[in-house]
Length: 259
Image (cartoon, rainbow, N blue to C red):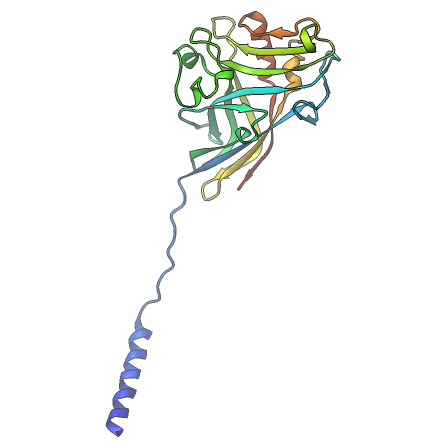
């Protein structure tokens, strides 16, 4: 009995010594993330008023009253610019944003390299090469976005805005602007560069931007658009190109944070 007790005590002592000599496990250190997402939220406004389709009442820079029943636009070729000036371009970067489809205004860009970013670039509209390559697939498939596409020869509608105004001479006081065209000298895709209000560092955390789209700037002031004078424009040409010079100014970053 005494011998058994001694054996138990020796075994217990050996176990304590054995485990006491083991090195404590070091915590697992996760390598820093090499990529993450950038989240976009576009918010449609007319001046300082958030757009409410069909029921909102607005006044353009020409003093003309209007409602908005449709407001669609392409955001493509997104590029992120780091503090050191290096850039990351999202591959196959084509999205159509529709005012009546809230989910289209919020999207994520995946696999953006970790780093600190100071600005973003994108194109309003579909670039000339993809406009002139015939009917496309994926996000550019006319069967998906047919209301933002004319034909293989005239390409995509870059921005579309429709509604009513007492100043319109069209039936039902309707106005319609479908802006597109890529012929030399009257191209309507427009490049936009936006500085962030503060730098955003992504890696372990994703980045997040809110962008205000101000439809009031569709009507000027760069090139004033009067509904009374031109209540409808649905073809490429010089005036479409002038309106494109307006809509490239519609965008501003209102928030840049992490998520």
